Each structure stands twice: as C-alpha cells, then as structure tokens.
Image 1 (tube, rainbow, N blue to C red):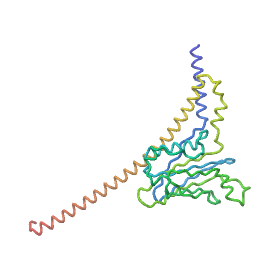
Image 2 (image 1 turned 180 degrees about the vertical axis):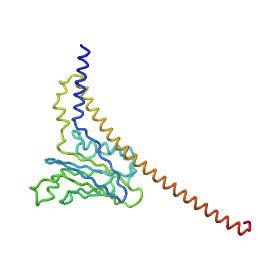
Image 3 (image 1 turned 60 degrees about the vertical axis):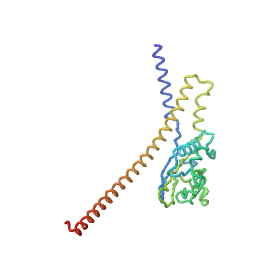
Image 4 (image 1 turned 90 degrees about the vertical axis):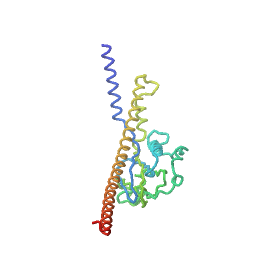
Length: 278
C-alpha cells in the first residue's frame, strides 16, 4: 500500500504539472521573414477588444553571420518577454565579439528597407526606414490608431492592423531578414500572477520546487523547439533556392557545351573541305 500511495502521489503531481504547462502561456521567439530585393511582404494582426499591443521590428542583412543573428534574436526575445528586466527597453550595447562580425558601414547605417503600419480607414500609423540592427518600437498601437482619427474617437477601436516591409534595394544579393514581434498588453504579468497564485517559494516542499523548475524548463524547451522549427524552415527555403540555381547553371552549361560542340564540328568540317580531305 505504501508503494501504491507513492505512485498515486507522483501521478497527481505529474497531472498538476502538465495542466500548468498547457494552461500557461509560453513566449515564443520573434518571427523572422526574408524580403528579397525589390520585393515587399505584408502581415495582418488582430488585437482583441479592450486590449492594446506593442510592436517591435528589426532588419538584418540576408548574409548576416549566424552568431550575430542569434545574438540579436535573443536580445529581441528578452525585449518582448513579459517579466524580463529588458521588457520594452533599449537593446544592450553590442559586445566586441559580435561587433567585429558586423561590417563597419552597416552598423546603424541606412538599410533602404521601409516599415509601414496601417489600419483600415485610418491614417498611416508608422512609415519609417529601418537602420541596420536598430529596433523600431511601436507602443500602444490601438491608442495611436485612435489618436489618428480625431473625428471619430467615440467609435470602436480598430482591431486589424497591417504591417508591411518593403525592400527598395535594387541590386543583386541585397535581400534582408526582418525580425518582428507583437506583444499584447493583456498578457503582461501573467507569469508573475501564476507564480504568486501557487504558493510562496519559502513555503514549498522540495518536490513542489522541483516541479516548478520543471515547468520553467518545459517552457524553455517549447520556446527553443519553436525557434528551431522556424530556423529549419528558413534553411529549407535556402536549400531549395540553392538547388534551383544549381539546376539553372547545369542547363546553361549543357547548352554552352552543345553550342561549342556544334561550332567545333562546323569549323572542322569546313577545314577538311578546304584541305580537300572530304
């Protein structure tokens, strides 16, 4: 009976932990999208009624070093994570190791990539050019949209927002990566509320402390899995693009080879005729 009671207790705690993991909101890493030269991409976001949101954007060169991309992606994740000490604050100073991997003329230089945030039937909320590696923060988009329509502030606030990224670079190999995230204000402090609603740390038993640490570890693993999934999609897109270029190069090589063979055959045929060997 003692072993049965022990197994029952463990099962109850496992179910409790699983329910907390499923009910708690995990903060995902920023979204990353590629925008080719001379191209534009748009995304639509909905903000629930009686809510507001912050938006954070950043642009990186397409050929950016992996370590540089990881550093800015992690810093932006901290910047948009509720409960973080860096929440909606300026990015920390770039380390020397990362700064050495960035071209000197790129850092905080003009990217020629533009951000445009719009709302239906309202003035443009934000139209601004990105500077390399510098975030653009749009705070309280709902309030900003209501300020933009002074004639009808009594109406319902807008719920749909369109974010567009336009790459006006015209040269080859001038694609960019855009990192962006949207933070709903209603989500702020949920993790702290969950932490306070359980029990204070000094009153928990060692087993309960371990389960709390397990919940945090599970959330971290979920975040990492989502980030790796998006990274795998980007790598697959890069591989498919490379394969397409290799196929095109192979077709061109075959055409050139056939053309050279035809010219050689024609030249040799005319040469032998002149020498009266044919």
